[in-house]
Image (tube, rainbow, N blue to C red; front, side):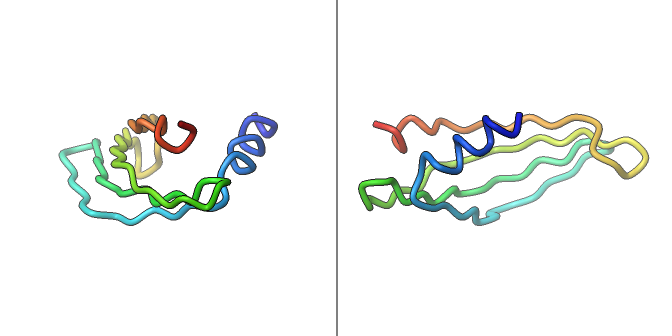
Length: 74
């Protein structure tokens, strides 16, 4: 897993996330983000991200992230 994370971090010149909104319903938390990427060629772009967290006893018990990062590598 560490190798995969390191490969991802090396595949872009930089990135940051901006939280747009957060919603909760019971033990489910949903976030809307904009991911701002700097590609290795210096081009900057923004892609939308949605994340869903399942909570149990105040801790994250499940996590899903929805992003189309294709433009970052196109």
